Length: 99
Image (cartoon, rainbow, N blue to C red; front, side, top):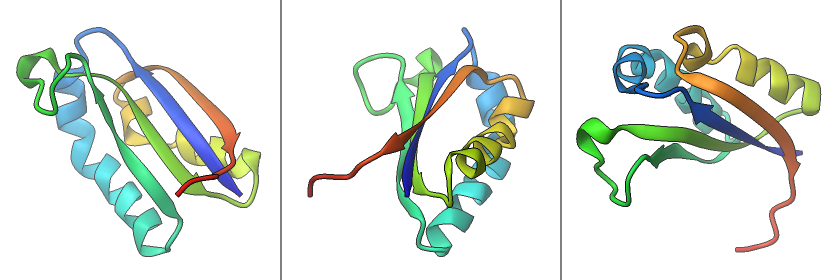
């Protein structure tokens, strides 16, 4: 089943994001390589794709996991969690309708 992992950053998270980004991306690439990743990316803190020093306000990952517990465990092990990037992480089942 698909799950949405919706994460909200702490204030001024950019430096923490940058330091943990390689490990964070490696985990997403592993999901992609396994054919389980639907989409992933950050939410710019301002209305532009390249927010510069404004940074990001959170992230969204939609991926396939065996169950909610597995999705939560994956989310809890994110390097951004360990680095203190995220203030809050919500994991919800997701039903893809379109496209």
